[in-house]
Image: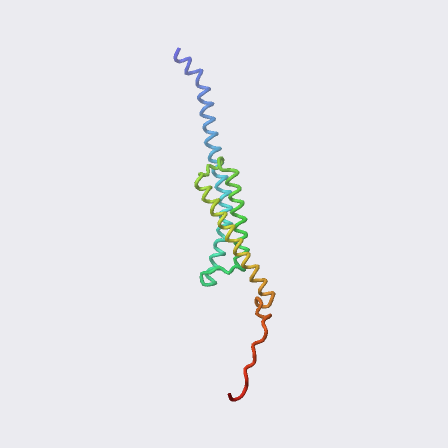
Length: 149
């Protein structure tokens, strides 16, 4: 009688093993897709970070807002896309809550830095267009008397 139970349960165990194999494969495939997608975003982000580092080195370890603004905007956009991807696929990609929250905080910080740098860049361009920021609007300096005093 015990043999009859084992024989009748065999298809169930084979089916369960098959389902487990599919689940394991799909989890691996999901992880691979997530890793590839996030690696693509990360590669773009790292390229912008490298460009910003090069600008900083060229200007004595300070960022020139005019040159940095486009890179910071692009980095803000990339991080925004990454954050949206993580929010949408958080469960599917098994992204830990603390990692996601830290990334969101950094994304907000990048956005603020980009906003500040681009505002400074706009002011600098405006000053250049106005001939040096209002210095041309000053009256000429008074002439000093010539000859012996």
